[in-house]
Image (tube, rainbow, N blue to C red; front, side, top):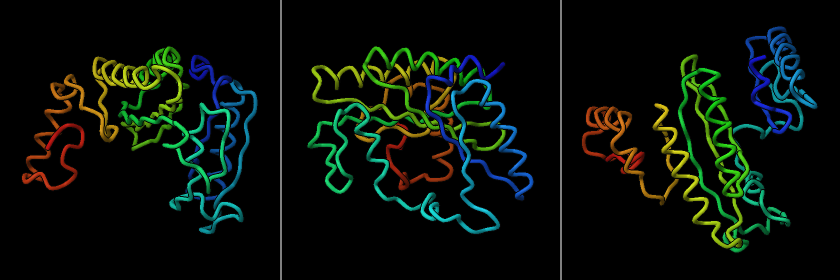
Length: 219
């Protein structure tokens, strides 16, 4: 019942499941599969690692960059070139990243994602978001705003959507933990309680401002 409002039949989702033993993994995967099967068209499971060893075909699944994520920036393109020949700048691919921290509360996340999907649709951008658990109190999300820079007004529409996503997040008490490089820090973020807390932490841990100066608009 709690998953149904997310309308997962319109999404493509993947998740990583960890467990302390094969038996716990099997039980955990089965439980999640049954839950998602109730609101999804298909559910597939692959065992990637067992007894401390990678299953054949998954050896480079984690921690080994290989360029496959470049396909994401061609999401809005009719042509997806071979990775060896891919050049997103040449091909007019636009991409903006936004990373937001959420409390570990279903409704807060679902409400924001539903709003974000509608807002991005106005800009011709599909909702593409990853979600990672950072303990039992916090969810880390990373939004990928992919757009076609060859389309008239696409840059302006994407930037406006990016600013609206941040502004609405701040109005709901959420905060970004990573901003897109090269884009101006929204003034609303500079004035937010989150920025004040980060500034105070920075003053204690890095008073000289050596580490990542400018990250999140501080330092």
